[in-house]
Image 1 (cartoon, rainbow, N blue to C red):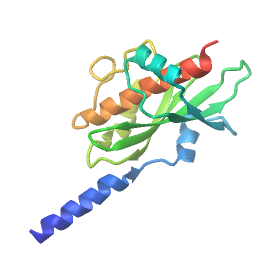
Image 2 (cartoon, rainbow, N blue to C red; image 1 turned 180 degrees about the horizontal axis):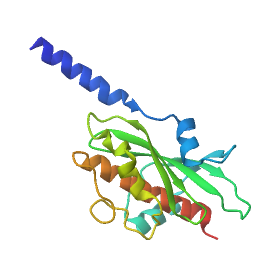
Image 3 (spheres, rainbow, N blue to C red; image 1 turned 45 degrees about the horizontal axis):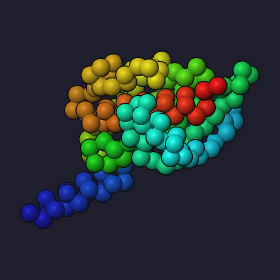
Image 4 (cartoon, one colour; image 1 turned 90 degrees about the vertical axis):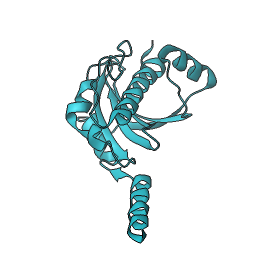
Length: 176
């Protein structure tokens, strides 16, 4: 009985602390490769922006603020990297999504995974499916994204977050 309690305590602390796969800096090097000095801002969604995004996507924008990195381009649009947190089974999953100047998804990088299982979503085989997706695409598991066996909730969380990042960048930065 005593060994079981110790194992459960270790598992609980593992789930809360999380596995760090990438820091903000290392994720930026992957998502915004050639950008030497991206500007960082915290985008705070106003009530009307939040309502519009929720209506457009059917997703809940619970976070009031999002960290957005911007890499300027000569045409004025640039590239973006958005840090999001989505709940997997019970814990938040932190990841970064790249969006190019035409509003298409780029690289998606898992930063911190806090669940006890499902971290297989970090693999390029899963994350690579998001490249080139637009806000017009479903970006949903079992529609245009194949989930990772044994990590369905984590797969769905990442897909929701990528859809949110696309909508956020397109609505707040790329609409002219």
